[in-house]
Image 1 (cartoon, rainbow, N blue to C red):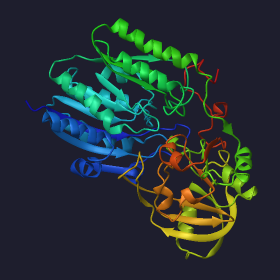
Image 2: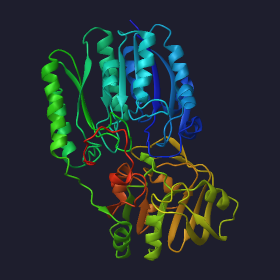
Image 3: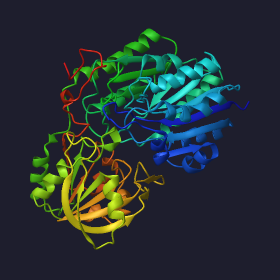
Image 4: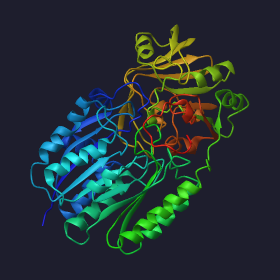
Length: 489
């Protein structure tokens, strides 16, 4: 029997403190692909769609894939954008399906709803009824709501951060969907939650306590009736009622015993809430370390954790760049600096030309630093298309939009128009910058950069520049999170 599967990929991580709404254009800037176009672009890389198609071929499924769409993390998703993302999915749901497979993020907030994924599932359930099995893949930075677990039988999150198991995660979830459709299992997903904004290290899995937790989860999955355990570190830059780390267990049978497993793992997250792995330096401290780095062992990589576009920061903060310039740091690259106006200005110049202008800091100067006046030499101008070759972005395309490289003193600054965090060395190399040959590499990212940059780094340090994703949560105006909550209380 060939099962008929309806699928869609709709992903957004919403930073509710970001004042710039996420419109349909923001999705088009990353990718907004319908049906066959999506399969052609994303069907044979390390993507969840590829994992779904792998399993579909194994079992002879008849898959109708409606859409693959994602925008860079940013402000709340507008009602119009939400409609453009979901209208075709809801229309297709009017037909008869044996199963539904959704590739979501888990932290979407719209301008009319705090729980974007819950809203997608609610509208789907209204059309297909309670019995059609729905499988969902999630980013482990999901803020998973109770409603999401009630409305989907199967929820499975990636197990790695940096995220390297997109395709494998989809295969795991799709296998469970197959078993559900054949009647082999009748799963539900249970949820345990703790009153925290996030797990102490944001779910980091390359070191620290999440390694042991995931090992314990895989051992628990060997028990009868336990099919998948997902540990979500949460996304703290969301001022919503159901924020915070969760443990999900997709299972059937002994629900009381299975819930106890989830609670045990959640208890460990709570008990170790003070055990942060990173040391968050000030910009001045990071610049001081850079000033004494000789680069013989490889570049010093400085990650501006707080101005990470991958968590919805603006990416235009200048505090770290100003500190590096003040310290006279040489043989350095910095990027991306998100400044469409500066990129357009530089785009009209000729490589080799000297220019004076203000860069960065235009969106919200109180977060990460205001406009920085500089004089430098234009080194590269053009379009911002990048094809990655690293563990996360290999074979996939991204665009920085209009892009330029401006050399100021000893620093090559990558100035871009579309916000992306730095997670692949090709995001520098495409524009004539070789990070492996630099003494200092300053980039805007939290954790994903490690997958591609750790192999070339002599040392990695982390900086909190005071931008929108600062660890100083008290500086943000939380109003909707339940109180008390750690670390605000």
